[in-house]
Image 1: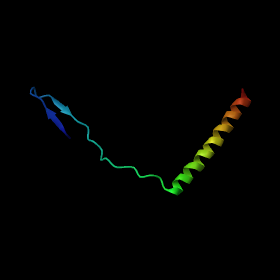
Image 2 (image 1 turned 180 degrees about the vertical axis):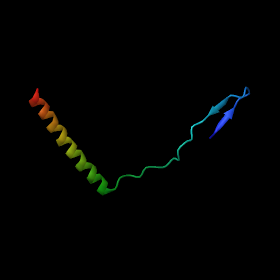
Image 3 (image 1 turned 135 degrees about the vertical axis):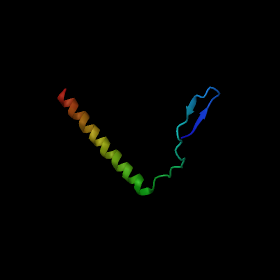
Image 4 (image 1 turned 60 degrees about the vertical axis):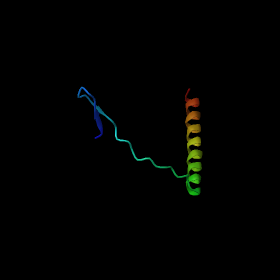
Length: 56
């Protein structure tokens, strides 16, 4: 654990920093999957909204 000590003997702890990495852009198949998931979510939310409208 990383820490420093001041003149009075008080400790100051520092959090461990995670390793930094760069994200990779999605592949073509991942983009297609995200599009399908978005379409399914949109239809699902539309159905839920319609049911809520009918119930009110």
